[in-house]
Image (cartoon, rainbow, N blue to C red; front, top):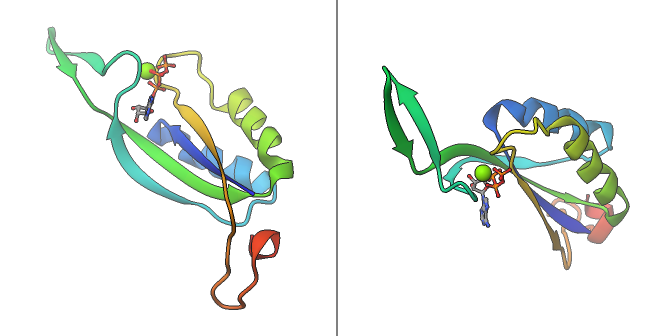
Length: 112
Ligand SMILES: Nc1ncnc2c1ncn2[C@@H]1O[C@H](COP(=O)(O)OP(=O)(O)OP(=O)(O)O)[C@@H](O)[C@H]1O
Ligand SMILES: [Mg+2]
């Protein structure tokens, strides 16, 4: 199993949910977050004046998935979420040692 930590623009959340659903992924959670990447924030023009905004709002999606679906999910995100603009986000992939459904005690892939 792997944990995917997917940071996206907020307006892409529904699209990511559809990708997860289409790949048979049964659960996820997300948090609203703020951060910066390589450009170290953004410059916004308001009433003709330029302001530097250091932290940009993003959504962080976390989902635990079977190893077999990881590459398909990543490819679907690259195909559908990419706008070609700065700030499209990042995907981190972590190994998951175990996963446990509290109701039944099932572990590993059975708990997904
Ligand atoms: N190295 C990092 N560690 C932790 N979080 C990061 C890192 N880089 C980016 N982020 C998070 O991801 C968000 C989006 O990053 P972003 O897509 O702008 O990355 P980037 O590396 O600047 O890529 P791009 O050049 O396409 O903009 C940031 O706002 C921040 O929340
Ligand atoms: Mg960036």
